[in-house]
Length: 345
Image 1: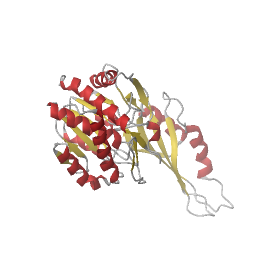
Image 2: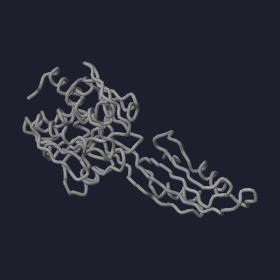
Image 3: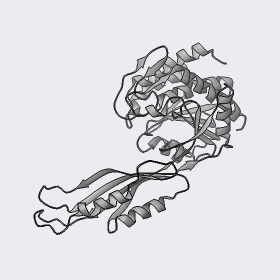
Image 4: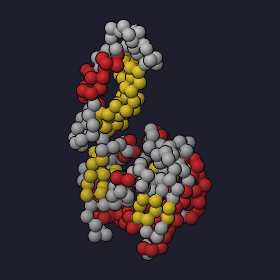
């Protein structure tokens, strides 16, 4: 079965409109239950809903894993014959729609593929963690995130969420002998590194709290660092640097996700590259400055890569939009790649 282009684009249009019509910020993915019941019936796919409200369609040894949750702030969908706008159109309901269409085509051809609309990717990746804990294994995984339709992401930086708590000396501000804010502000400036080069970690303060009275010096000082670091640098290196600057303070890590990197000879990467080449498109391998479910799902199989339609610069913005042509190209790319991966199971 190979639906002709206009038919496939119209199916993509209706499917993405369904997905965008329901508001699913992290933690509220369950609101999409009826939508997925309808999708499962239309595309003849079995549906399984997990305890974290991840939705799995179909069954097989190859997983197409995107996510159903979005950042907060609903933007109602606007549909035209060319493009679709709305919250999640790019990140990542557009890629998810392409994956559902590809799995429908491939399952009809006898290549059993499973699609995972994972929960909580924009928060703590509860869906990906749940999948890993389940013990389920796959031969190959393609992660659905916007990669500008012709790019394939082979590397993501790791994540550290670092909390620093320092004690101060409460005194009347008019006669204070010390001030914990003044003491540790230089440490923030010396520690922080804004994103610049991929090969260097970014160490960004995102929360600062101190004091509770206008005329008393603070008895405490708190700063949270959001850290992203590349493959080849360890979390110990970064924590050592922060600890050195905040001597005498207590450091704790509330979340740690290691970086991930796969090579161009990885089966999933090669299949996606050929999937684009078969359409006369030139693929590019890229590194991503953030962190995604790929970092976690790598523990299931090393044959993993990230690919999807949509302009990644529009993620999390008020201008999310994706064209039907992008979805069509991505769907064929997934189909072409799956044809190859199914032979390697």
